[in-house]
Length: 359
Image (cartoon, rainbow, N blue to C red):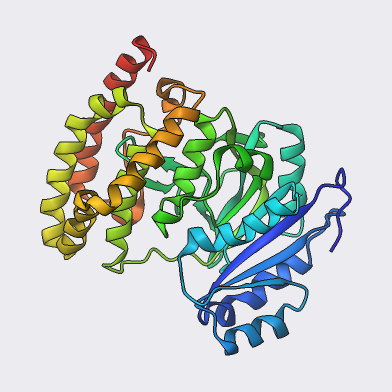
């Protein structure tokens, strides 16, 4: 599959786990094969927890793909990194990360590349992702970062309103369908594999902004996603642990100090909420990660790298963050009527302080 848009070298990455491909690959692959716009690309499929049967299925179903085999399931972050490392070594210009349970409109890739060509400081460009089972409803118009580290889809389950805008800045892109500029990844690094899954796209987007790159959404590039909000108890360990890791890594020392009182109050509330919701043990497990001395070298070195290489101050990017959590799947009366209003006021005051002291 070859390309003619400025002769750029482009790769598309899909990550498989067990029988995921048997459920979703046919539709996803069909959309990839139908891509239009004189766009040339190579297809990579990473097979996590690979077996003889999964390898056979992938080779027969997608013979054009370069298959990367992982005996173990080392997570979504490493799975993508395995392909990205190959692409770095072979001097690719762009990588399109696509969930296997998603599929593309015919002109999606050409629209993403066109926007990347016009915005040379865009390190990541997300497609407009709609819900595959309700095509008039939004999955993500870019993702939002709450100032205490929570990440969520912007405009989730809302109807899309046509706009004259072709793009806008976003806090971070959804890893379900995002075009990454390899030059930017050379500078900021790949996904943090310690995160394993969840928040790895948030962390990458945050680091891109700190390094003077931008994250955009291309409204004209369209993808559809068979998205389902998992209510598995085990996911809360990664969500709670990872949001704290990402905030620890990327905030300045001043921001950490200023946001700590709000974080403390939120953590107390989450502990109480988790006891009623059945994931209290997962919440405690997330804390144990930070008290384990074997994890301290990672936490110190990961923060040191970001703080040493950052080029933007926090106050310069906090306009992209939010003081509210606006996500239908976790909406409740207390969050909407008490937590969000109070946290939003706190966030606005904190932003003013950080702007004044230029931190």
